[in-house]
Length: 123
Image 1 (cartoon, rainbow, N blue to C red):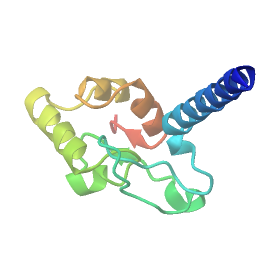
Image 2: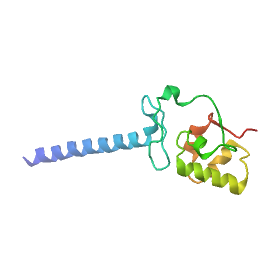
Image 3: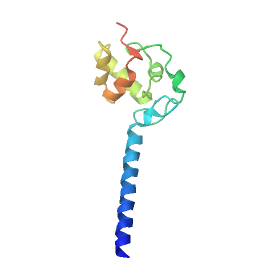
Image 4: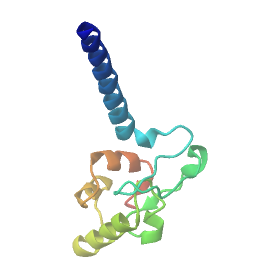
């Protein structure tokens, strides 16, 4: 009887491990949700749920002249992050390149990659 209990525990642990791995994969790839644009604010709040086919209109947002409301139309940019971009721009002047946007706290490499092709510096 003890032998079966050990086998049962091993199977249970294997399933739990698979569940943890699957959950981790889903959490880290949540912006790839089927059918919807992956648009989350820095704190994970969904800020836009337009179908992916229409989420990107092709019009670039100029990060040197955009208002907070215009910045929030970008994937992953919520009110807080939009304000950080405006504050950075006010303190440091216009962005020389799109890559300089990564100097804004809260914009890392992944978020910047999501924004490429959607933003411009106008120059």
